[in-house]
Structures are given as C-alpha cells and as structure tokens.
Image (cartoon, rainbow, N blue to C red; front, side):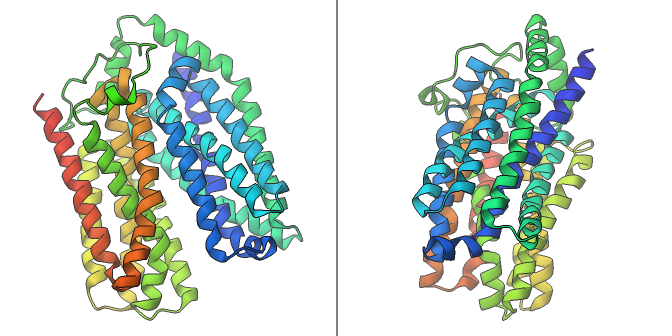
Length: 419
C-alpha cells in the first residue's frame, strides 16, 4: 500500500514539474508579439521577469513555514491554483501594468511549488528521480513555446496562448485537489513511523557511498512542526556555503541562456538566426544531461555528480575561448548545458543529508531564493560589464562564477565530512 502511494505521488510530482516549466518558456516566445501590442520597449520584458523572481524569492524564504503548517499537498495544490489564476490574468491583460500585477502572484505560486516539491523529492525519492524531475521541467519549458506556436498558427493571439496554458494549469489543480487525501494518508503513515527507521533507511540508500554521508545536523525522524526562522537558519553550519553555491550556479546557467546568442553573433560572427538555434542547443544539453545524470546517480554520489558537471563546464568554457569559430559555438554551448545538468538537482537531493529533514525545507527554500537572486542579478550585471569591455568576456565571466560555485560546494562537503 505504501509503495503504491509513493509511486502515485511520484507520478503527480512528475506532472507538476512539467506544469511548472510550461509557463516559464512562454514569455520569451510570446514577447516579440506582445511588446508591440502593449506599446512598450522590447526591454520591458525584464521588468516582468524581475517581478516574477521577486515573488519567487519571497515565497521561497517562507516555504518552511507554509509546508509545516499546511503540508506539501495543500501548498502544491493552492500554489498551482494561484499560477492558473495569474496566467488567466495574463490572458486578459491589455496594459503592461496589468502584466506586472499578475507577475507577482505567478512568482509566488511557482516559487512555492518549486521549493515544496524539491524538498519532498529530496527526502523521499532516489537521486535519479530528482534529475529526471528537473528534466521534466525542461520538457515543460520546451512545450510552452510549442503550444504558443500552435495557437498563433491557428489564428489565435498571445492572449489565447496564455489562456490555453492557464486551463492546463487549472486541470492540474483539479488533479492535485483530488489527490489531497493521498497526501494526508502519506503524511499520517510517515508520522506513524515514530522510530524514523524507514525514512532514515531511505535517505541512507539514496546517498550510499557518498563522500558527504556524515550524520545530518538533526535526526531523520518526523519533521517537527516548528519552522526554522531565517536568522537561525543562516547561522547553521554550511547554509551560507550552499546558498552561495546556488547563487553562483544560477549565474552560470541564466547568464549563458541570456547572452550566449549575443556572444556568438558579436564575437564569432555567426548569423542571428543560427545563434538563436544555439541557445536551443544549450537547453538540449541540460535536458539530455539530466536524463543521463539520472542513470549515473545509481553509481555515483551526489557530490561526485556535481564535480563531474563542474569539470564538463570548465572544459566547455576553455573550449569556447579557443579560436575555432563555429565549432566552439555548437559544441561549447551544448557542453555548458551538459555540465549544468547534474549540479542543481544533485545538490538539492543531498540537502536532507547535510541538514536533516527537520531543517531541509527551510534550507531548500533558501537555496531557491539564492538561485533566483542569482537570476535577478548576475545576467544584468554581465550586460553592464559587456558595455564596458566586450561580449567576448562571457566565458571568463562564467568561469569566475563556476570557480565560486566549486569552492563553495567543496567547503560544504569539507564541513560535513569533518563532523
């Protein structure tokens, strides 16, 4: 019975990650049509993106309090409902300020889903599922523009595209609310396991042979109801290091996504049409990399997978610095995606081992907040720097934050290995 519950909840979680990704891919695809109709500069999309990030950061830091008060099932269901309403609001907007207003609840809903489901998967499922769940997010992000394209070619508008995706989110909301009794049964079964041996065995099995299998900061029994205040959380050993790791990682991933096309156009002389397809290769590298990573985690620990990703990234960035023209363009951007693939999911999966299940939701929330802060700050920072130097500085910029990532992650591992 419990195995069946686990499997059904896992299927729902996979579906939720696909749904989480679909809206993320549509804004960039729809904006070339949207901005002219809204009579705003093309750069105005950044304000929408920043508002979404701010909402995500705010709710991520509250995810521990929300999840411990309402449970993962309710937080997920109501958050998807909030995103569905926000997307419906997007579909009805005919003024730019209306999009900004709806962007905040969308960010709040998406951030709550992200933090709560990541922590649930980290505690209860093997590392391979964490990689594959994030792969499903990538699949959703790729589906968003496809859905929009179908709507537009069928004679619809971007408003219709957002409405279709809002209805898809609404359908998922119904499924999640119908599944609430299943979440309650699961939570009751877990709380009834007072010895905590099953959960402890599950976590140990997921990280067997890991270099970071030191005893967690707290026990692995049932999570207490008291949320961990941020001022207490930030003083915990290792929290600053893991937050810096996510901040730096997000800088590498999101700066590549935003500026790789410009780099290849202005540095390597590649046409804008081909450069646009190269960004697609970056996301293809992440998606394929996470599929492969899921299988590799059956043999290698989370810490080793992060190191493997970092090594691939170093090779990719060095390769981009070589004067090989289009060869570096196609291969380099794909390898960056491949290197990014295991880092995010594997560090999240190791979080309950480092900090214990009692604090893991608070730490995962801090990780998400740090990642979105990196998204908010570091790509625009490179834009400012590129106007002073050149866009050819991109590989050096990425390499700097990769070094920060590696040093912070190794500090984290060293701290828990010494416990």
